[in-house]
Length: 73
Picture 1 (cartoon, rainbow, N blue to C red):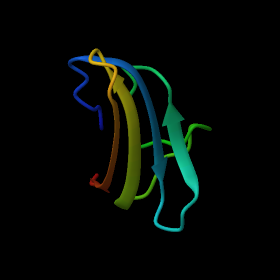
Picture 2: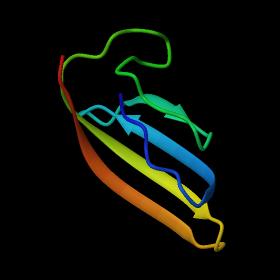
Picture 3: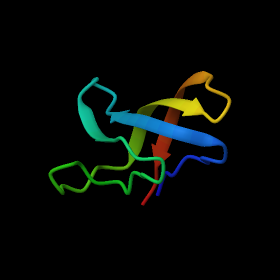
Picture 4: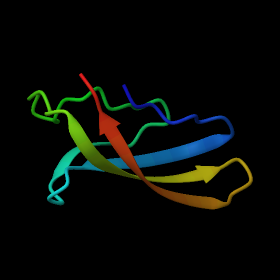
């Protein structure tokens, strides 16, 4: 399960993409997470996925993080 650390965060949006650039999952909650399934409930294959997280902190600053996730089962 992928769940960003959200201490000091007011709003958060996240998107998970496969290696072909197709959107796999997304959420717009501070306590959101990705469990290795698509938004339609299909199990994702092990491999590399990309995540983009945009957040606003209590300090009113905007943060944007791009990273690679490895799904291992």
